[in-house]
Length: 217
Image (tube, rainbow, N blue to C red; front, side, top):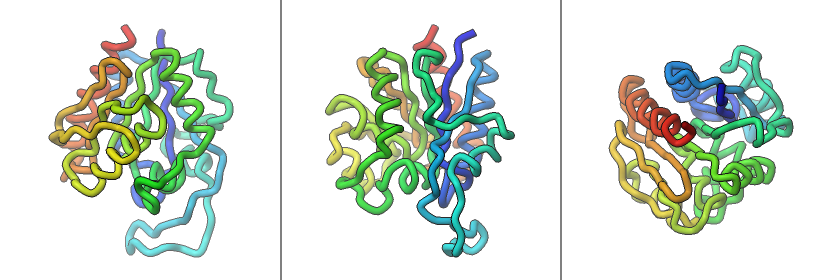
């Protein structure tokens, strides 16, 4: 059975991986009969946010340890990911992508990406294995893929401008739809960049995973 790698950026929308998007990714992969394994970098989070108040807390947390909460403990250090073992890659969104896997939340078009993540994504790309980016994760596409690779974060003009400045080609997209760069085998969908509820988020993610399944058949 072909399997897909999923990379999480922590646990929690404001400082880690978006939990609904992460769980929906696993659910829709399983519904397509696709096995998956979860990974996260063994690094400290940029900061910790109280998800009730939105305020920063004076503590530190580890991205891998936090992501293990979503994966029910079935997770590995990103450093152990062997691209040859997988047919494709999925990166769910959440502010952890823009704070832990990169500094896009703070620097936008001047941002940088965690080098270990960039290397792995580029290995998938160079081996012509599809990569799916959800929510804010498409902001990474310009760092990783060929200039002009199609990407979407939905319709937010400022974020789209930063995506374009990083070298991708932003395409406006409804929450329930996807954007596919067929040449680069890159799929993206807005998810909670636009979704007002879990049903809307699920619709776009399901469509993205179904397209991913077609690309790896």
